[in-house]
Amino acid sequence: MTITHLLRRALGVGVLALLPAGAACAQGLPDTAIDRGDTAFLLVASALVLFMTLPGLALFYGGLIRAKNFLSVLMQCFAIAALVSLLWALGGYSLAFGKGGPWLGDLTRVGLAGLSRPLPGAAVPENVFALYQMMFAIITPALIVGAFPERVRFGWVMLFSGLWLLLVYVPIAHWLWGGGWLARRGALDFAGGIVVHTTAGISALVLALLIGPRRGFPGSLIPPHSSAMTMVGAGMLWVGWFGFNGGSALAADAHAGDALLATHLAAAAAALSWAALERIKIGKATSIGLVTGAVAGLATVTPAAGYVSPLAGAAAGVIGAAVCFAAVLIVKQRWRIDDSLDVFAVHGVGGMLGSLLLAPLGSAALGGIGPHADVPVSIQFGAQVLGVGIALVWSAALTVILAKLVALVVPMRVDGEAEHEGLDLASHGERAYEFD
Image (cartoon, rainbow, N blue to C red):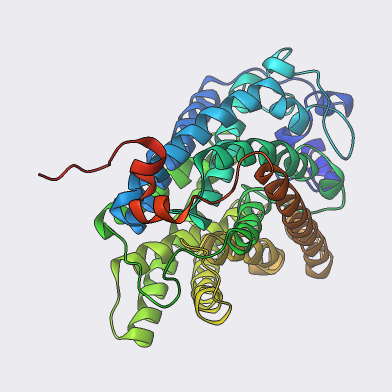
């Protein structure tokens, strides 16, 4: 077994390059030469992950709401991308991936200064790795936007998103991907099931409760204004997920191929499973259901994509579709919570479920890939429960605190007149569509 594999097993880190910069050298690993193929692969993957947010997520979410609020969702996604990029460069990356300690990184890479060439333990420059991780930081708070469209002030969204990035996303990213204490306890997250989907999903549910439902919910149906646009956005998300999961291998190699096969098959299996469940439940398979199923499968397989076989990825998709389908019904119909675009039920539940499924599906008995496949299922499952539980509690608690603190400066919700008029005009003085 190589030194790399020994380090991965000892630290519980899915990708060695996600250790704090310099940690690999401290363990005796020599710097590798920069590989242009791997570097090009990660640059393309970075573009694909940004493509997931702009325009993929923006169109996916925008199509699901009423036309008078469409532009406001695009504005939120675009503005969050700009804000997070600057915060990541100024200090977010350093705090998440700087050497630091078990709880948080240091400030040695503030302003993205002092980045190593190459990244210790990988064959890519650290600046490319920092860029790639920036795209993950962008999409995570953007996902939360789906919990409260059509009723929240733009200023509140921006201030909350910036603080949430620094106080929720950055610490958890360090704990799991930066060589922090959860990684050392053996918790795994290949591409963001915990760091991205669990944190965003839990925070979305909390905010939906704090902000309250849209006017008319749950008594009146609030239909999407463009199912076709949502399907286009979902297609972009599916394509972009190749960068999201494949790029997390940090190399253009068989490991990336394994991750992409599992990812693609999970999405395909989940899309068809959701459509079948809809056919049984309501008598028809809908376009929104088909693409929601695909996204549920993608979220479910994300934490395990690099550790499972292709067929195990498909199995994760089927299970994810069934559980997330039930979660949507429970949240909307039983709990009567207006998590408007099902961020918790799809991303949160899918991310948590996939993180737990990683233990059995990633075992050697089921064709698991990598050094962690030999870890006993019970031990790995315990580590995954710890990781999910800590992320859940931390995200929920900090979201409540931040939401209320920001509301002291900028109220969360628009007034009734603005909500009736639509946020496009009330908040931005524009309309997405002009009709004569």
